[in-house]
Image (cartoon, rainbow, N blue to C red; front, top):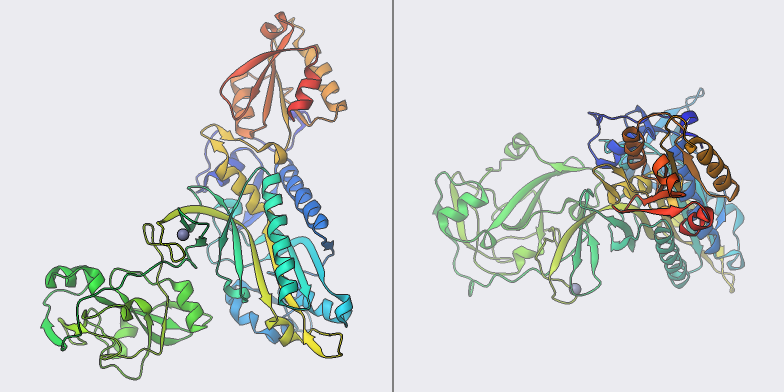
Length: 563
Ligand SMILES: [Zn+2]
């Protein structure tokens, strides 16, 4: 491809609207263009990367036994209502109505549609297992589309669904996909960490995410430095030490003038925050919910949402707390009725805590569970932290960041039960089909590749997904043979099947080298009067600082070996 003909222009300035590195570089490299919030066009260079990622994914899905098909984007809303997942997705679901006032949704995922399709084509255990997939556009109305291709509202995803007769079959399909996913990321040059994950709005049991580890990643990962444990911070668990303050003592009221926050109360009463109980108020599906947790811990809202099984969860406003007759700053579960209390198990692991007194500027000492208060649910709803102890091995947990580039779920039977997708076993007994689902966002993977592989000059594409392999960069001078040699080499490299971006512009070396670095093509081949004096070209890898002179003779074979 000649750069003089390439559609898309590089920019020297960093566009103001771009927050993340991948967004900045994609815009500067002229690879994407934003049409609306979270809606992007891919220009030819980015689309070549996209196609390479797509091909790798397709090959690995096929070799794992997947069969490709295509499902409609436009879906009847009733299908979503049947499984109740219209509520679970909430405002994330794009809905519309047709000319007959029928409600439709733009598919954010395809479990409902494919289960319906499978139920029409599977009757007997002999028709199973099946691995079916598509690579297709999805729509999700993200509340805050941002970060360029990292969080968008329209995106292309590979989604595979497994259908099995039982849990053991699902385990086999699931493990096969875990392996295929690892092969995909390795082939893309982006090794990914596999972490335990929350299954979110999709529902289901086991769930794992694949993370490309990078400091700029918006997902926090908690992993053990001593064993294999790794989990998304939404799901991660850690050991909570018992706070032993001796045998339970009688409850005691203390005045705490001017002290409302945990820090203020701790300082005033001279006890560490871990010896206090903190109250946090939420509105869960419209109902005020009282959450108690040890003072030094934070509520993990994903865990809380799962415990409450609610669709919408938010922190309560001060006025909402006040209306319920609760004293903010001194709230406590002690002596409260008529309000749902959810306790983190930390408040049950210890004695003689300090808690609010439900009176202005008053707290209670020696609060003990279950003697002094009850909770409707006691569960782990705390965030695991860097430095906590590993629940599996007691080792030290560490926090890192990554970008989610794949998500797999064991859905089980809850959707097939609702949609009546059944099969008949050897004995003629009917059972719901056991389902797993497995997704990769392709644009996200492309952006993650840039987040992980760049420097201050631009992108450094991993070779397998680079838009071109070679940046052929002649530095033209009057009356030199550079042009002739470059044209000839370009033709030879093309006919050898190498992917070449030929910078045939008459621009200065500075402009050309800057663009070569920005576009991140793995190998740069420079031809100048000086290299030609030695019958050579200069070869430089994008990821390395040093360059070398390589004889023109045999250069095609040499480059072929390097690609
Ligand atoms: Zn461990």
